[in-house]
Length: 377
Length: 141
Image (cartoon, rainbow over all chains, first blue to last red):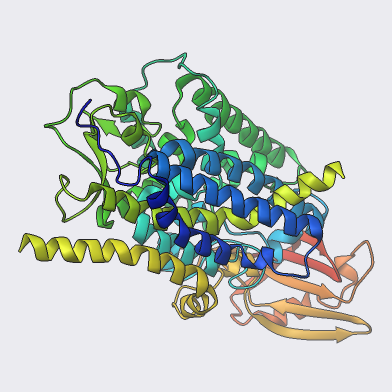
């Protein structure tokens, strides 16, 4: 136990405040649009609550030296409020959370980052985007989402899945409901299924020139938007969406305490794993400190640990780092010694990762919170 | 050497925060930059393709798009032509009563090798000020 790394700000209020102070300004900047005048009192109040919440969670992350515990709180609440905000926005714009042929033919469907996996081949061969969305204007335009995916993945790699993906919070949340897993062993080889999904979806979408994962398999259609049921085909699609959501996002994560949808089914997760190869941050295993207790294997929600070492599919959530009793697992900057300055490495990682999380979830967090408050007043 | 590599590694890691901020703050500029990429256009399968003819008959405006024959490497044998019927607030649309039917579509099809297949409708949708209709096309040998 004596080797467990002690982050230099841990338990020290002054240093924690010093490290948190820049984040207060940055979060304020991210939420500036919501904090500015001209909004309703409820909206401004929600923005202030969001600011205090984000800052306090970051402060706890710095003060306690634990990453995953506080990240997960923001991530899960953010995902829930994102869906509330997204659905209410759809209802406001088109009076329904379903879309019809009209929205598809007028190219007004919001672009989600998972579609990126399906547009790559046609973009390379045909030089077109196979999605009925808007290139620049409107909510979640194609250009903005592509910039977000590329820009943020370069910096945090597959950290995208644990720090910003507005879907990931769902199965992260359900995987934490039970204290002990009902299904104790899940073969980590299942994570390669996500790569098979990536290849299959990329090829199928290219062949048919339409985003097949979105059309047929995305479980998160159940909590965002889905196709209006007008015939047998759309009925089957909706049954598939809701079934996959219940099985992959609720039941299996609940029973296994693993993020089954993200780890084994999401093609975007597989694509982002490849960004881990070019990413400067990773989680490093120090064999000399490892006591082979296996806590990291059990804790990892992404099935990414093999022989106590994080692998390509690590989403840098920090759970193994928090769980490791000897500090054998730690955040690390590639090209540097894992023995020295590990607290710097962690701080250097959680800064951009947390800003990314606030950037992606902050706006919908405020809107979702304002909607809930409005329900009660 | 190790120290130099470490220095640049930490520098690159520290730049991460600046890159994330730059992505967020400069989103408008990055979007404009992204729009210059050669693949940044929606596939005609979804947009219906370029409008090649515009007709105004009474109060109704009809936009006829170029024929689209979807295919990854080359054009397929089957496709569609999209017709936007604008300024047409009626709740029903009779295709055969429209000036676009038959001859107009045939005239607008640039390659004479394509023909409309008995005006069989593959997709149609009501939009705010009219209708969007897609008619099935088959390439002639």
